Figure (cartoon, rainbow, N blue to C red):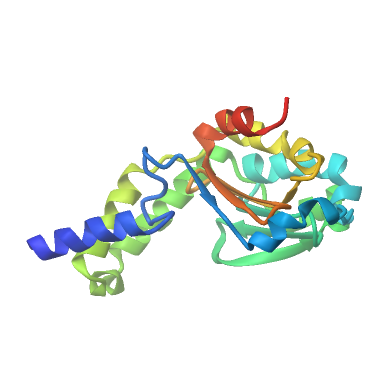
Length: 221
């Protein structure tokens, strides 16, 4: 690549909060502040108990099952609105929306989410990236973008099984925090990140490997 393309590549990687290359080593945790008025009125807003809250004890084992043994590679749980969204390795360009009540039912899980071994799921993700890189249309992208995505495809590592378990098993605790409770969470095993929005309208984007440390620093003892 030319010097100019190298400069653009570095700029693309630096200017995105979470880029195509994911979170870098110096940004294992990113905080985004929202509407200041939301933070000022946090204590006045009572927690709305949604269908997710009602079924949380039944749902947590299924969330873990989806990420470890089923087709899901990204999971969004909307505690405030009761919305659960999933992305499947078998249909990666779309997301599906589910109700908490249905997701708590074993038969629904069996129908909606095909079984796949975790290692096979990771291999399928890698193969999907490779298929994209081999497509002639891919070559129409600027060289610096091809380079960024090729490097990511060759070097990315999925969320570890232990990290998935660590995140999922803390959902109830984060939801039940006084005042600054969790509103929603997104878990992505491809990017190996956890995105959490709290009642104060703040957003935290945390690397999976840094998740335990994040909790230790931010959860009240």
